[in-house]
Image 1 (cartoon, helix red, strand yellow):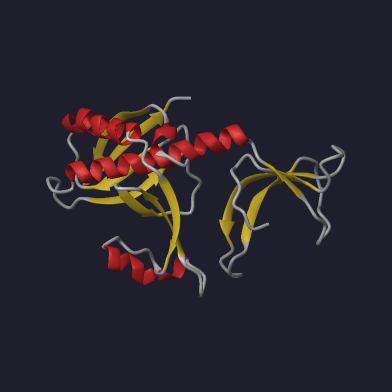
Image 2: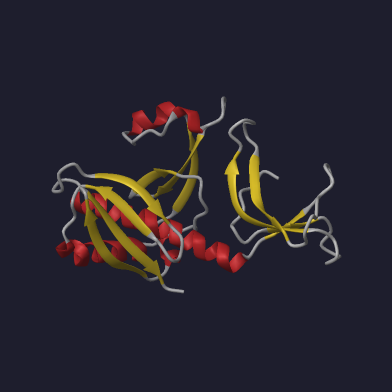
Length: 212
């Protein structure tokens, strides 16, 4: 299996029989030893169940949950772009640090102190980007392409030898190196609400939600 599933993925050795082993995937990550291999981590529904090596399996995805995660992930990029375009020139030491796109903890973190007075302006810019219905495009770049386009380059070691880096580009807005699932347009994020701006030890955290 080469795709990276959502945490709601399950695999069975035969979809026609509920009696055969079922494995619920709770997370997926790239194998640090074998290039290009995706590890699916989780647990069997029945104690001591095992797949036989080489046996074909069928993956089943929770499409509703996957869509929610995709909307949250794209909305996080929209929020990051909105904050950067609005505040980078005026916030000392500004930089985008990391983000969480899970329903109960969706937030983007930034270097620099962002005052709470900017919340309304950030919300307005997020609404603007969502309403513009901008295409969200997945591309694959050589490492040198980041420098050529003036985009912060990821660690070279994150791409297996001979492979390109996956990037997600919001057309006419922003580009992020990213391996996650996304919707096809900013409009598909739906109503995205900036919840709170919190600050601690020189960093700021802007939390958000999308309407279910």
